[in-house]
Amino acid sequence: MIRSILRLFTGVIYIVVTAVTMAQAHENKPAIIDLRLTEDRAQVTIVLSLEAIMAGTANHTTSGEGDEAGPYQDLRSLAPEAMREVWLAQEPDFRKGINFSIDGVPIDLIPGPVTVPPVGDPRTARDSVVIYEGPIPNNTGDMAWQTDETYGDTVLRLYFGDAAEPAVADLAFAGATATANLSKVAPKTALGVFTAYIFVGFDHIIPKGLDHILFVVGIFLLAARLGPILWQVTMFTAAHTITL
Image (cartoon, rainbow, N blue to C red; front, side):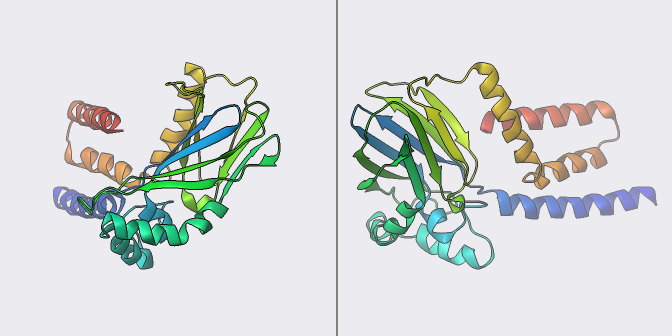
């Protein structure tokens, strides 16, 4: 009797895990923003999913949910040139959601080239590249960069001149403002990076990782001994860490 109940419960858990995993399998990656400063100009290179931005799905899944699934998939199936034309028509609205300033002076960004990859596998996110540039009053002082909350999380990498390595690389959650004193900028310490990603890890599990939690619960219900449970959970954690 007990075994039957456990099997039934395990079956329900499996179905829920499968459904949740499918819904979250295409979770959107943060947009990568490379901000390169010279003495009088800024160049901004943004790697992002244009489809997710335009369909309003950048904060959850690239495949879309509910009424947004259709628009995302329609955009995802467009050839590069057609997608570029659709984006250019909406780009001015996107730019309004970018707030970039140095010492409180807003920086006007001028649109540059847009690169859209081939359609490829429509089940995966397509990373397009959008470039902006504009004059800056100086490359010292206090810098602030903030994007609209609907654009999702971003990783901001700050470069000076022709430097190959960023002076700063920082994760900004949706709608948050990334700031830096350009006169005293310095890379984060290993401890600072570790601490930042601890918070990212918690956010990845709670509230966004219900499928992970249910998966581990399923392992617990299917295993009769502690040893196999610890082994399987450890392998799952290691494999997931490698994929991240």
